[in-house]
Image (cartoon, rainbow, N blue to C red; front, side, top):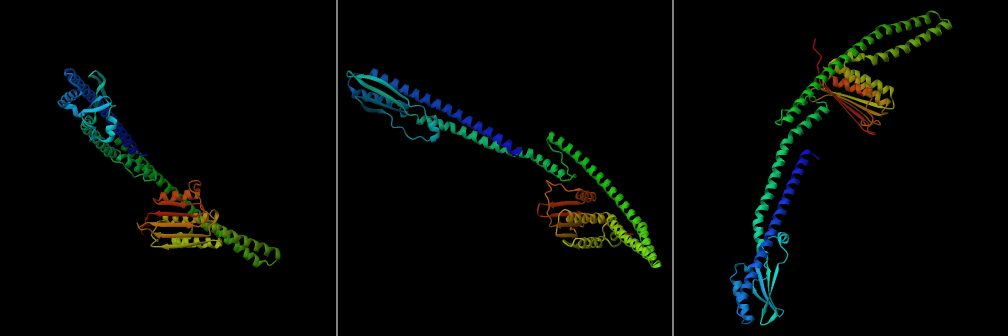
Length: 442
């Protein structure tokens, strides 16, 4: 639940509470007013009837009825009342009519209507004591008047609540809009976009937060730039050492092994005795094996083809050698676009990435198919995609090993993007994108 939704929900509850309390107050006042009006009208009518009865001549029930009717006819509020004369159990209407249906809504009438008001006054006519006058109040007119008075107030409270709630919704959304930008900028920092910056907001608290965030992003960006520079320098030194060691092995150890093998062959040709010839053959065989081992070391330290024939030819040779050593699997390599203008750092990074992935495919993934795609990206960079059909893994529960971590650091140090997609039973797909820094022309 977002902060904006919570605030608007709180404000909505507050306005609904105000509306309910206002409605209760209006109904309470209207109910009290209706009750007082009906009771006062009924009492006044009863008093007028008593005056008429007291001043009437004792000339019979008919004359009394006529006098009471004239008295109620002169009473303006008689329309709110029903006056009957009960004589011998028989009711005779003197004034008023049955309650009419009012114009107020039913719910308002039910809430405002008071208890039935009925006033009785016994009369003594012709020595009979079973005669009485009854005044019953009809509150429908008072309820309608109360509704006419309360309706504008209720509509005003409802309208103010709706308008204020909508206004607060818009204002809070505007105030909280910077928070969305802050969250988006923090998500960018989390994903490695240290160039994200926040503008200076109008609210002082958010402006302070934006200033601190921008300083933090600047520090992180400088730190990442320094780390990339140190990583590039470290890898450059490492590759230089590997190149120097490869040259030493090739020039010194390789030539020495070749010389030993040549001497052993000569010994076997010069001395044809059994022990000497057998020993010379053994020395020649060991020398050949050592030369194969040295060549493997040279290939791992520094691929000679990379310096002589470029990246594509080196990767073809690497893939062919892997296919020869792993007959149970097959690696397909495809290169598209101009790839001969990459610098040495990009060449060695891409070569090491393919080398590491092929090693993982045979050692950990038990893959039977591997696809290596190298192409020129749309933005001018280079994209390398390596996919296998191995057992895969869940990156959330099984973090990548040191080989993949080193591959990621090497790519990011060159300003590239490293994306690993893996799932149990669905193999592994690695995508690398590097910007192109062309080799300087001589």
